[in-house]
Image 1 (cartoon, rainbow, N blue to C red):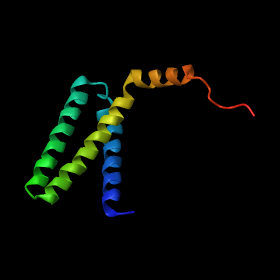
Image 2 (image 1 turned 90 degrees about the vertical axis):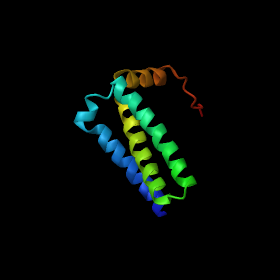
Image 3 (image 1 turned 135 degrees about the horizontal axis):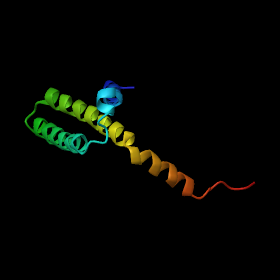
Image 4 (image 1 turned 30 degrees about the vertical axis):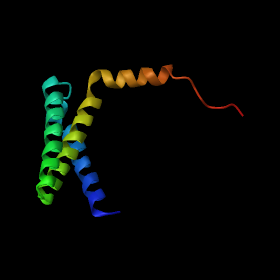
Length: 102
């Protein structure tokens, strides 16, 4: 495995850990937290592109890693929202069974 893949996996894991922290998990369904996470991701991606165009690769890599952290935090908070688990469970229950009888 190459170093960039390990760095992305580590950043994503850190974001998941932050999303599972009790202080964040209490506010997982907060519209302010979810919307500010989306805005932060967009700003970090655009900042990364801008930094690449001006040749600041180390800063662009840092912005990319922060994007992965915030994205994982966003996903963890979204999954922790009360209605998401119930919607996923009911969708699985309604799905037809596609196993073939032998």
